[in-house]
Amino acid sequence: MKLPYFYQQFLGFLAVIIILMTVTVVSLVHFGRDTAVRSIETRLFRYAESITDESLDGNDLSTIQELLYAQGVSFFVFDETGSLIFPELPPDIEARVVPEEIGRLRAGERLSLTTNQEDMLGNPRETALIYLPYFDNQQGDYSGFVTVSAPVSHIDEQMEELEGNLFQAFLISTILAVLMSFIFAHNQVKRVNRLRKAAHQVAEGEYSIRLDHKERDEIDYLSRDFNRMVSALKLSQEEVNRQEERRKTFMQDAAHEMRTPLTTINGLLEGLEYGVIPEQQKLRSIQLMRKETRRLIRLVNENMDYENIRSNRIVLNKHYVPLSDILEEIKEQMKEIVLESTNKLIIKDVEGLSIYADYDRLKQILVNLIKNAMQFTSEGTIIVSGTKTDEGVSISIEDTGIGMSKEELRFIWDRYFKADSSRVNTKYGESGLGLAIVQQLVQLHQASIDVESEPDEGTIFTIHFPDRDEEYSEEE
Image 1 (tube, rainbow, N blue to C red):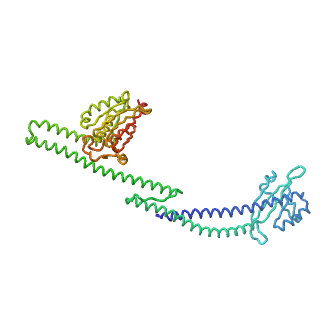
Image 2 (image 1 turned 90 degrees about the horizontal axis):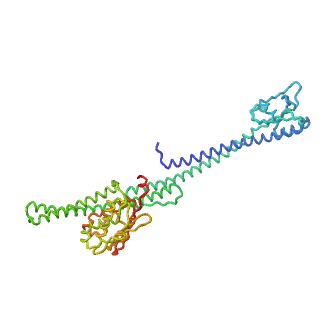
Image 3 (image 1 turned 180 degrees about the vertical axis):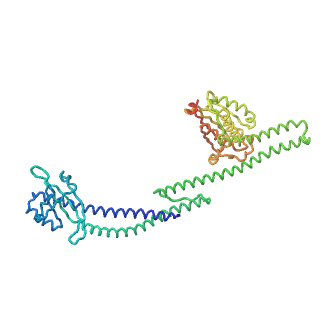
């Protein structure tokens, strides 16, 4: 059965209040009656003690009988055999009472019970009855017992009056409970509906919605978490939009980059096919086609490499790599690129330093950073240096290029981002993936990378490589 949340809350509050009040009323009535009966029994025991204190003298007992009779109390005194001692009966009548638990009386234990008896009109009447043993003053032997009784039916009349008063209070409280349950349920459902409405707006793409909350209860905490979720969704949506824009830009750049070498290759192949290229230019044409082909391969490889890294399909083979050796190898391989860039590449302070890393991936990181520095530096200097730290080794790549603003620094690790859109077609960075690949490889090495830059003052990239990790050492 479907039941709206409002009625669930309303009935829940109402049921709790009514059950609590019902239990309270019933408990009060029973407790009041039990307390009244125990009070009468206590009073009867005091009367019985007074009777036994009078040494069971006939005159004294008659006086006590007259006093108690006026209060509706009657008593009887029996000897150790259960024969009636007081009051005196006619000679032809013998009264004997032997309680079922006579052994307990002989042991000195007091007994109390309630019985139903008939009054003079034959109507049933509930009576409280107590048994009190008494003993010989000199020898302490069991001598008999005293029974004292009094009606307790008046207690029921009092309880009925109390029940009537409580019932009136119950009706008034029920009405108040209905009103309070309605208010509480309405308030809770209103807050839930506010969340529901906000969730619907978010589903429609409205990420600016925010819910006020005071952190008083779980719904307020839910509202707080809802605001955090919306903020995260907004950031994610902005990131998706930004990445989509960069993807479009990259596709345009990649298409342009591919179109240029493909057009060149196609033109040269047509020239060779129709024999319009002179014999002495054919070798030059083949070399140009190879150069353009390598450019296309590099563009495709960078994208594949980035996706492999992001998909954790790269396995590092880490060991200690002499930093001076790998930098000298890079310097030798990039000699022509450095000359063409009109920049100077300086390597210093790297002797004796070793880095715990994968050789090929470390080389890829350094090459990408050096190429990035050359891309944005003209007739300047690129300095690569190393420093030994307590945690490992730090490598810095510093250039004197155009630098970056704070806004650009926020996005340099993003895929397809290029700080200077005018340099999208240089031979050092066609795809805009270089720094994104660097960041992924640095993270795979459990290292960290920092960047400092100011417009027109250059940029410094610093990579902090830790020493050999404990987990790898234990595996060996």
